Amino acid sequence: MENYFKRKSGEDLPNSIGMFSRDRGIIGLILIAIFFLLATPLLSTHRVTDFMIFCIFAMSFDLLYGYMGRLSFGHMLYLGTGAYGCGLFINYISGNFLLAIFIGVVFAGLLAMILGLITVRATGACFALINLAFNHIGFFLVLSPLRGITRGEDGFGVSPSKLGFLNLSSRPAMFVFVLICLLLVFYFLRKLTSSPYGILIRSIKEDETRVRFLGYNTFLYKWLTFVIAGGIAGLAGVLTALNYNFVNPNAMDVNGNVGVVFACLIGGSGHLYGAIIGGMIYMVISNFLPIYIYRWEMFLGFSLLIIVFRFRMGVWGYLQKFFDYLERGGVVSRFLKREAI
Amino acid sequence: MIYTIVYGLTIGAILYFISIGFSLTFGTMRVINFAHTITYTIGVYILITLVNFLKWHFHFGVLFAILTVIPIGYLIERFIIRRLYGESLDYTFIATFAIALIGVDAIKWIWGVRPYPISDPIGSYITLWGLSLPTYRILIVVIAILLFFALNLFFKKTIVGKIVIAALEDKDGVRCLGINVNKYFSIVFVLGSALAALGGVLYAPMSSVHPYMGLSILLLSFAVIIVGGMGNLNGTFISAFTLGMVMSITARYWSQGAETMVFIVMATVLIFRPIDI
Image 1 (tube, rainbow over the protein chains, first blue to last red):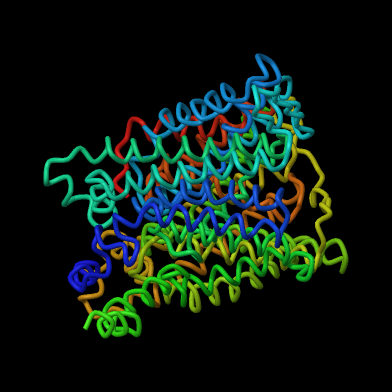
Image 2 (cartoon, rainbow over the protein chains, first blue to last red):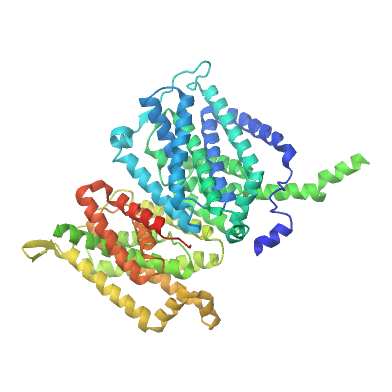
């Protein structure tokens, strides 16, 4: 009921995306690119590449949590599957990294297809815990029973060969490659979430029973979203493997899920920009804060509590409110009106 | 083979202690309580401090550990979970997870990351049919069965238990009768935390003690309540012992795969049974 009123006031309507409405999508892409290019001199190229990969991961999580309302605490499983799929392909079959990326994404997607059949039927915290359980199994499998292939805790190196003029071992090339991936994923998810399909999965978040009464097969859509999110997380995993030239079970670590949940919440869930902002915030915090704060996990716990109690809209939510204010009758539009006269 | 059965029964008993509180909190309050890991772990660490460092007797250590966990459980319920009733389940889950993170870090701060050993407090063996079995494990199974009957008695005969059972069925109906449901929820929560601590301290001599020990046991007890049914007391009892047997039989043939097998059983159950949660 609460959501119903919110929808009436026009804040949460699927098509109103604040100042970035449909025709300004390209501007958004350019802004993101400029933002990351500007960030490189401040931080280092390698770091920013890492941050962008995490942003891809956060966006895939946001599709699941922010748009469809399914909180997964086992999303690292797909990241890890992508990383291992790509790494193993390069090590054992061929060094062609484009094929390896494809294989990694397909592996993660296939795993999401199989597990999605089970997990997607649950909702709420059960969904989270079932995913967490699967992630736990995956981590354990990689760590010990599959030791022969994955080399257990030590991990293995990944060295893709050159492909024409593309040489991913140089940092700037990797940066550009990841940036292109990020923009493609962003564009794809934007198109996806503003399409009728996207509106449908938002409606599933609001009230699934009602959507089912309208005659939609909600299971199919939930499953499809889960597979897409898994595949994109796999892409993030592949890029992680290529960026570090190394894969170890940390890529599948259960505790990594907290990071992406934190990123999604602080950025503002249910918005792709929010996922990117949140991803950047989390990565900056996690890269620089542990130097100053020794009790890092405790800090993370307290900030999660604060977000849950006081800061649910996230950074993007507040920014959007500000933009709305500007558009509705704020300084800019008044100024523009005067110009028109 | 007898050893495998006894081992399975012991694990089942421990799983029962931990999952009963988990199941009750979910059944009444619709809250997946991730903070269960922390009440479990804190109980064990208090026991270690008392027994290993202060040289207390094991029994007093167990008693004191459980008594210490009760106020902690109450504080978590009063100040975090009660403020999130009726809101999105995801927020409650994230909040309890945050508590677990804080708790784990606090434990690392106070006691360090190093695992502690704790020895079998009884150390004697019972000879049954020509086999010598550790008394401690048999004692755990006996305690679990006694607890099962005690809980059944509590929920069938006392007024508090009856209110909780009624709230499991229909929370709003109970509220309409003019009963302050929140009070009983906190009783259930504290009871669950105390039982988790009991499971933890009894399991400690058989496992290694480290700050992250709660996570895998929480996932196992989650599997137990999925198999047994949420908020179903008898179902939890049966499924805890069944999954305990599954673990021990798997461990006999493939020692690493015990936990994985439990989750495979859980996944199979999930395929064949609709989840309406």
